[in-house]
Amino acid sequence: MFHPLVFDNIRVVLEGAVYDRDFDGAITITGRSDVMDMATFHRQFQIEFKLATANENKPFVLAQMQLRTTLADIAAEQLEQPLTDQIGCTICIHFHLPMNVRKEIPEEARAITALLDDIWGQRPYITHTLKARLEEKRYEWPPQRVDNQITLDFYRKIDEGNIDDLRDLIDHTIQSLLQLQAYVER
Image 1 (cartoon, rainbow, N blue to C red):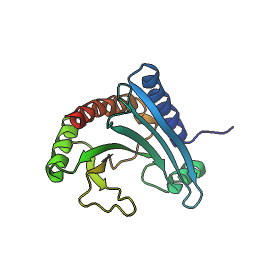
Image 2: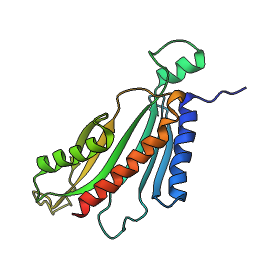
Image 3: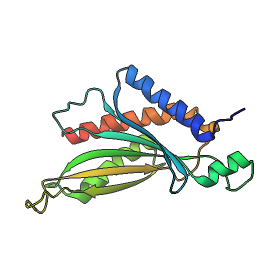
């Protein structure tokens, strides 16, 4: 009989819990993907959402939960051989938000990191990746707006023993969305 991977079990619970929050009216799911990368033989599941109250006509924050597993984890589980320290998968959370360049970017990044540290208890490692779009023949510098991708990385593997923690993870993500949306609207 087929035995689902740790990744599959966690993906099903994570996806179901996020959809429950969508059905409750707290968030709106805006996209999802479940990918098997044949070049590197890794799996990735990603689900993205925004607050249900976010206005499409105004800047809004998007959350993206990403679950990944590697060939070593898949093989170790299927072969029942210890090819890795711990069989499991990793999860990270990305927030995408617009930032006004007229403000001081380092100060803004510090403020956002402090806001997230208050919610997450300084547990995940937080990075900011800024990007700006320059239209052809309209190279304006500095740009009026940059997009900030904030990544929360936990740098550890999870397995079925962590399934009960997924609801808290989603709650913290939604709480972060609320705080970041309020921050963007200031």
